[in-house]
Image (cartoon, rainbow, N blue to C red; front, side):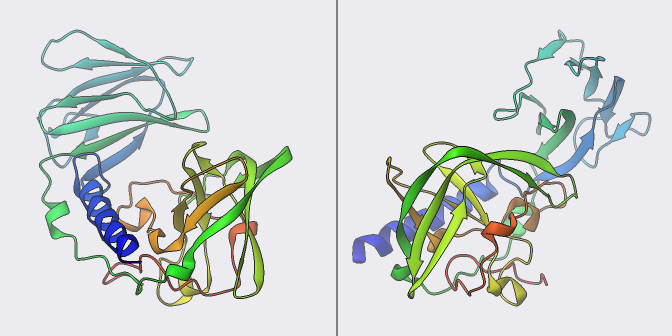
Length: 263
């Protein structure tokens, strides 16, 4: 038990460090859909996309009719043809800015972080429910005979199609539940969930739980590590919402609570 509590506290420290880090969610200053043609970016008023931080002229992005994107820096450096990858968006830096081209439903968007932002230092401490070891569950990891096609809505009302290949089946307080992994990887499946604490204590839209210690037959779901989604921290994130199967009619009083000052 003491080892689990120690490991959980270390996980919380790492979670906060990642959130506040250069690639976290607190320093995003904008997310913009790209259209075919050339779009200039920078803080100067003559840019197509005017930023709140960074150089007067960052450069330009040109999207062709096939969705390919090229970045040309304003300082005269060579143009870069970006290799678009949904799982690993191409990224490049200009001064304190970290720029990425993300892809959703075949549409590209420019996401910009200001690594010099003071927003990470201004985050109030994240509150957690008291640790509940009984909410660390070894669930049955069931491979579906046929992948389950789902249309998952998002925080920006942009439905996306996903394929669930597995579900986690577990019992808690004598009740059996099933949760579908709709995102993530084979070694870290992501479950987008909502439970009755969303009415008053946790983020209303959803929380995320990532599976651990995955085997052919079992998966660990630690709800003490249920976290707020990125859209709880920034308006510039697009977060999946839980499918109906992952909306649970119980209170899971474990993991992160909603942020201070939010409703």
